[in-house]
Image 1: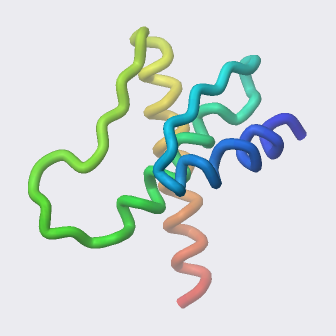
Image 2: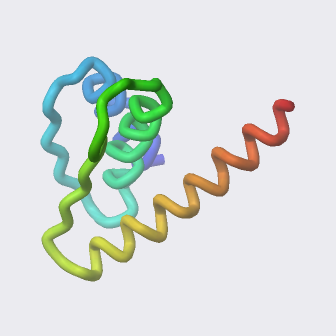
Length: 85
């Protein structure tokens, strides 16, 4: 339930291009709150070259958790895309 609240409160603001600072307990949806809008924005094609997104993590442990979650989201998005063909 807390994950949904985090997403509902932050994703619309991030999609509008606003800066968001969110502090919450582990498992509250913070990672999804910034990754989902990032993936949505990366879907749009652009002529820009180079990096289009950068994720910074303060620790190796957090970086690995973010990588794991990113791979899980990627599988879900690929699966849902295949289901709508």
